[in-house]
Image (cartoon, rainbow, N blue to C red):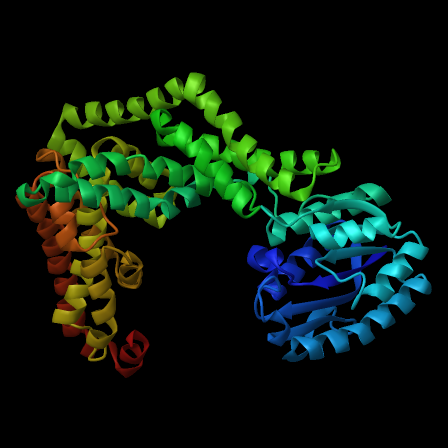
Length: 521
């Protein structure tokens, strides 16, 4: 196993590019080293409280980080003035130089080091033994190169991050030593989970819906132009989140996702998600290609981020976007056609299916994508209305029954907060699961209540969304009065069933004996 020493400081520009967070900076390097089977043997990093480019930096506070061989982790060795840290660092640097002379260190990773001062001993030892050196910091690396060092990769810090620097360091060293290396954190397309991307992007859809709904009010009609401008947000956010599912090279991944997302506006959310995945797949591969081609880290970061987003974005913009947009339209048309066969009956069937689907884990796979595909075109959604009226309000009805006719005295206190989360925030329907598991009648009541709410939603052709307070769901609907009726239908039906079940259990409880009552508690 090859062993390296990490030496340097938070520097000037480096401080603003990740050097101000020494724990994360050093941690990223160590993680990438492990991926290439490279061991950290020693470390010496001076982390100042501000950029050393500024006047008065000499009087700044500083921390000194070293490598603890026992715990195999970085530790803060001391804290004091920058002058004190430099004096302590010079002593530690001499120790590292001794290890280099003994052959215990095979390479150096340098960041804004001081080759003519604090780090002179270690750099000179590395030069004498021709150790491979990688590093950033234009001025310092230029001096080290002039000293005759075996520099295999160097760059400035502009445009880099802690992660991209770490990756470029390890790629260069693994190439020099001919070691296999797969960037830590990268995934294959088969490992992507698009359902998590959709749920994470929901706030972007809600933001657009909020502005669209507000613009419908006469006093706020001027917001229509702002709502139109914001309409591109969901696709951009989806592309960014999808890209991060496959790689997380910091700003490079975010930029790739954003570039692709903006080009995918006309391709719909299906195109945005696919384009984002393609961008995320490309970022680490282009990054490694450019590093191995000898590009400096700054150029690598910029080129990988830009090109990884442009390639799939332009493909969708000029060609594939037509098909992904048509796919979204086909889903919406199929849903509208199905509901049009018999609005009340189909709405009831959809409502009856909501609880079985969510309890079997199909919500994020089947229900949520349909909601977002509808919201892409209409802002709100028929399935979203079913979500709110058939799931959230039904859950609230079950919890309200525990409040009105509690099976035991302590139940009222337990359900207050979950009930508030249902009604006040449109979420946390999981709170009602426990009552469904205890009683098949409560579960059957929930399914029936959701079916009744679905019949109202389908019959009135309602659209809205969940994940918002109940009063906002009414505002976001296409028919406020009708949707209020749908929500109350689900809530009251579930409440009636839950109340009856609790009342019946109270009547039979004395016959069950003390041990059974204790078990019910």
